[in-house]
Every structure is written in C-alpha cells, then in structure tokens.
Image (cartoon, rainbow, N blue to C red; front, side, top):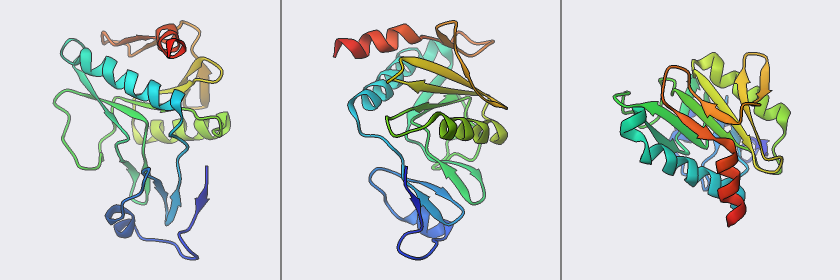
Length: 177
C-alpha cells in the first residue's frame, strides 16, 4: 500500500474531496493513501458480500455499501471494502456517522499489522463491528480494541441481530469460480 504526498506536497481535505481517484484512495492528514484491490478474490468477495446484504436487507434491517468514504476524523478518511448500515441511517454523501460494520478484504500486499491498525481506527471512531477477511489464508478476523482476533466459530455475526454470514460459504463460492 503506497502512502505519499501527491507530488512533493501535502493536499488539503477540500482537494482530496474534489479529486476523483481510480480506484478511490484514503486520506491521512494531507497524504493520499492508495488501497490494494482489483484482484479477482478481492473483487469477488466484495460483490458477494454486497449481494448477501442486499438479499437480506429487509430481514436483517441493514444494507451494504461498497467503497464508501467514511470520515473518521476531521483529516482522516477511510474507504472500507464494504460497510453495513442500519436501515434508516442518515444518508450522507460521505459517511460521518459510524456504520454498524466495516469490512476489509485483504489483498496479497496487505499485512495483518496494517489491517489490525485500521480495525482499531474504525472501532475508535465508533464502528461497532469490524470484519477482516483474508482470502489467501481462507480466514476471517474480528476487530478488537487490541487488534485482530481470529473468528473460530466460522460465522460473521452481529449480536442482537439476525445477521449471519458463514465464512465457509464465502470461500466455497470463491473456489467454484
């Protein structure tokens, strides 16, 4: 993941927000942070999770957004691969209210250390649940205040809701492609 000022200068929040990036980039206090994505496993899992959320929207009372900018601090923007919001959440061009779940799908270039640090950032912002999915290792993690915890139950859930995603199902579908 590249982290660098554009050119030899830092850019303002306003310039970041008014510039289109392909793919979208994150922003950290004047620095554009490129995201690793665009590979088959990453793309498939992102769309599959979005489909699961859409298909269960009414039953689960939530909806998903892919690659939605989330402003977690005045000068810090993250772009989760998928974020899950409750139905009735404020509709914002850029989210300034924490989503219920932030989902990050690791690419081969990503590290557990970086994913763990990002999970902590989401939680500090108020995101209730952070899921990190590693397609290479075929595992998923739950974000905690101290980092990532391997999900041994085999299920991505949100307590108090009917949300349930079986990790094995994600990888079974992926392996059929």
